[in-house]
Image (cartoon, rainbow, N blue to C red; front, side, top):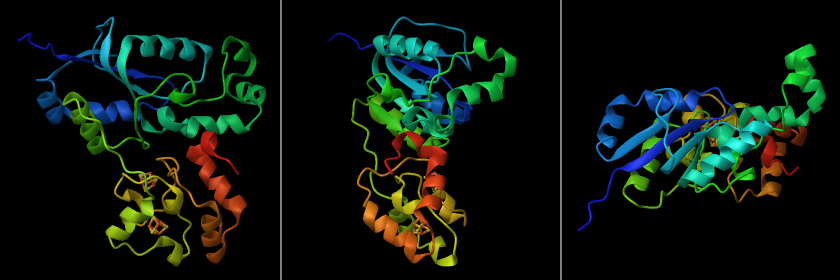
Length: 248
Ligand code: SF4
Ligand code: SF4
């Protein structure tokens, strides 16, 4: 029987804070186990090597310049499986806050008289440009979820990810609901998978994993009103991570 070579894995980064990349580098012990089954062939933060093709490409960051568009198309062409990691790559993330402002004003504020040297586009998630096979949500993505998806792909399985609200995980942890304490929380409309990390420490969910796909908009507005919050307030808070997904 023909011996199967090691799986070629590459990591790439676009516009973002690189928190997701660092989260991976901090996985030293687990990565050593995985390295028995894969070859990491490109990873700018850890090595200089380059490769022509990749079995799996993990891509962080949003698309925000014409050069980014060319590079992500090239990465897609070379990759069998492309996985978007983190809020910027999966839904534009905080970068897309610039999309609600006049683009020339944004460039003027950041680059002043040099603004013509830096072409910029509205920040976009990867799926706005190329086909994305899987997404690992969150800002930053959690190490647990990254490992779960990575292991599934290495074993040739389809990764399973939750598509229900953070409130479900919060209730399972028997947390007291922050809304009842007068604290605004985006748990009812945010995709679970983080284990309700923030509410479990008394912090409100700020929606870093994007919207759950089956939001009941009317019910959400009713809940807001019941606790004395306006739709405008909700939209302002949802914008932090979800500009590209907002439909209101
Ligand atoms: S604290 Fe937030 S996440 Fe938890 S149940 Fe209340 S609204 Fe949902
Ligand atoms: S609770 Fe909300 S903001 Fe916190 S990690 Fe989970 S999805 Fe992100």
